[in-house]
Length: 440
Image (cartoon, rainbow, N blue to C red; front, side):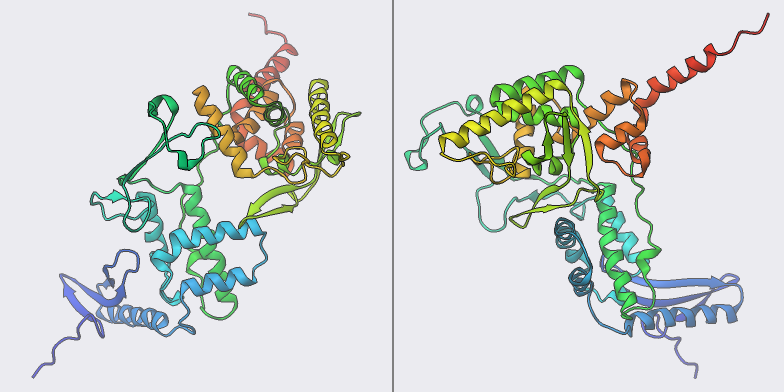
């Protein structure tokens, strides 16, 4: 009596389809989609099909009998504990892992996280960052019972919460309405998916180095291409309006916005500036540090390129900074203190003994832009500084030096190539002027 053919869930099977033989083997469940996975291959030679089946069995056995049953979560956590990272970078990696990696693959043994699994995960993220199933639902902003629509009334200055809210027009006062809305699929940005991949690849590289796995599937996984840089600086008119509005709010705030425009400094570099970093007599600013806030703590570290640089400022900026220092000195005098060179340039403290909160500065600038109906953000002022210099004919290397770009201007050229048209046109005119037209 003939034996029944082996079931594909256990030992796999070879079946004939037309003139070819097909090898099929059950390989478990896809952790991303929850679907059953089968390895399939075909050949016109039955012996070759049997070799394919043995190869599939070896692949599945390698996953089932890996040297460790450690999960991807454990692997990432172990890597983060041993890998040398800056605190801000570590916090970002932990955020990517907790928001995007652990909910899907956190409990999967690393031996089962294949190249195909990773590419399916990235494809899901490109479809919808929340990885929804395509069915409509309400995206609740908090867990547990709550009011789906909440009006946060804008309280008049000095009014305690217990006093309640007098009758008012919410639209006129600018009261904030927070509500749970229907879910709309929004794909993750290519840059975000790439950073998620960097976390997984780094952890798996460490696991391979430790002997937990024999190969690193993340090395072969394809990731989205990084989109071409598309800076969107404010126009000259918008820049003037932003400076004027900032100055109306507060001279110190106006000085901050002005300084970002004329120097192109990064936010972290700006907030780390102390008065000792200025040479007002020579009109020089020394950029030596970054200020970041990580897990509720203020941290100072090297600049992004780990190199200090010097920026020259014009006479108008020197005068504004001198006035800014005078205001700081007057506050110290009112408190019976002496100004110190280690004080921060921008601070919410009367004595400037601690820097501004980075997020607070960004949110304040965003609110100012919304009030002026200008589509911009704080980093766009850095783009404004770069594009204005390039459009004015300043050479690429000088602009790169002011911005703190590494690579001798390669980064500057990649980001701001569109603003070099003026220089290219002048180069063409120079070459053309050196030649005479041939006789007709």
